[in-house]
Amino acid sequence: MRLISLCPSLTELVFDLGRGHDLVGRTRFCIHPAEAVDAIERVGGTKNPKLDRILELAPDLVLMNEEENRREDAEALMAAGVRVHSSMPRTASDTAAMVRSIADALGSAKAGAGIAADIEQRAARVRDAARARPPVTFAYLIWRDPWMTVNDDTFIAELLGMAGGRNVFGAHSERYPEVTLDALASADPRLVCLSSEPFPFAEKHIEELVAALGWSRERFALVDGELLSWHGSRTPRGIDYAELVVNAAR
Image (cartoon, rainbow, N blue to C red):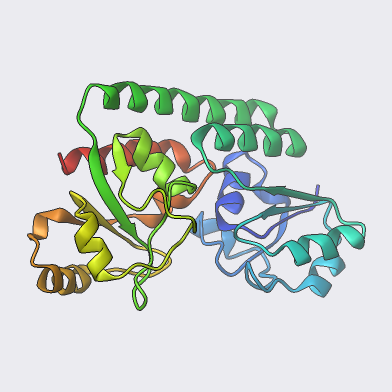
């Protein structure tokens, strides 16, 4: 089978399903597993794939994500006769179902069942543990200038929420809303997560927020955006990591 993945987390999943040798194309953002992806041809980015080159590579299946990739690119590939598997999991349950679906499509049902079961079991354990603890209010920043966060209709909020987090911007109508520092101050979260992606937050940005808001350093945490936003074979570790992040703020 000839595969192309246009989503970094799905590229990683293909390898963890034991089908990395079938990949003939990936995006420049597909970086895991680092020791293997360098040998695979890059076919553009997630938002600007090289459709002509993808067609030349004659894939049997192209893996896409409805948030990472553009609908028009998926439609163009399907119009050209290419089989496309597109997904957009928002929850741990959605992710387990996606893993099983992709694994079935690749002929790796057994491997997919193992990853999916791991997701479901860890999610159940973390949810059960969180019920016995008080919730932790949080805000999760993904961008600076303007400051941007996430609402509850996101995979990030799902992972932190199952661990006992309560998103202070969860009810916002936009999935990735812009917020002001005044709004952040008014929401008064116990924990402010600064993600490593898509904006690479660093210690200097915590210092900036401490100075602007007058809050203690302990209310802020630099967090691994890959673990908290990549859905697939990284999700089991992401579930455990979300629990560590929330519990550290208690």
